[in-house]
Image (cartoon, rainbow, N blue to C red):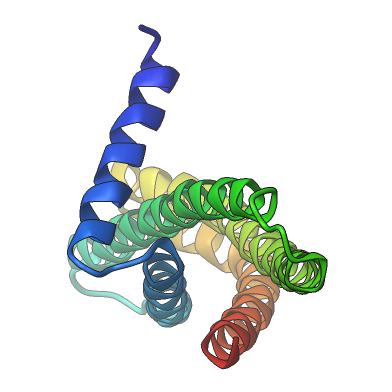
Length: 206
């Protein structure tokens, strides 16, 4: 049995087990979207904090340059952790949504009442539409993270091996790029957070 097949089988068993104790896939999806939204809010704040620390470092006038490096490195590592968490949250959403939509489609075929069948199909189509908007926004926001991390990583590594004025000059040279990239990331995160709130609201209404 391939890994993907095994993973799907495990997921199916996992969701079935939760449904047996009264937790349907729909509720799991809403919960995971809420968790992803919360993680994106935390990530947005983490990258703002990292940018602030980077900006402070460019104004270094003398003293403990190694301490500056350590602070920047901590911010970088915290940002990487959040980036990984965002990616994991999206994967969790995709996993349960695939199971939910597959089950929903199968159940629609079992209706004998054409009115109920049509109503359920319309509801599924609407939910899928909101879901596609949500995931597109989340993935777009996630894609904006790497350009920030790339610049950040380069500068932190350079500072590590060049604890001198040249390293500070390098930081200053990249500050505008980092500010622009973080601004784009924050805007994308906020759009994604809004999409998550809309999706949750529509699921709760339905």
